[in-house]
Image 1: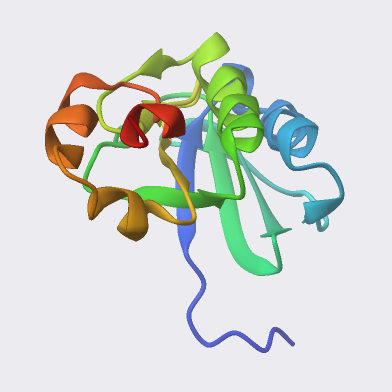
Image 2: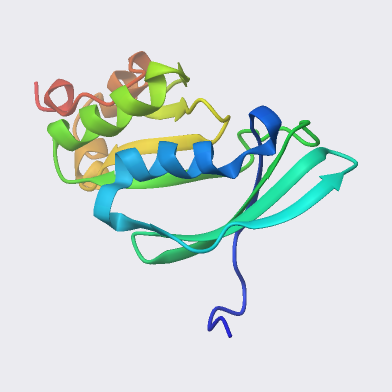
Length: 150
């Protein structure tokens, strides 16, 4: 039995409802920090073929569901923050998620499945205490740490 009383559940739409493509996409960027459980086929639903799978990302448990037809699109009301150690880590996540996704503003981006990410330096609070930091952030899509240090 699962020990988490509350598990974030994310509903995606993939080609044919195939959750394996979704799992491989996230496994590629998170590597050893991503573990997936058993894929559970739910069969044909009103949203087409549907599959679910529990995954751990950085130790956090999530339930992922994939359907062939989009039911409710993901939006900015829910996002995940990634606290990055340095610019290289920011660039790694940003470049991966925006390759087939899109850039947004102030460190936000959208991956190819529509999930929103805030790719931020772990010392964002310190950087935002610098003079003109708000103006710097408002001009950025991807956070570029050196711009705050000028």
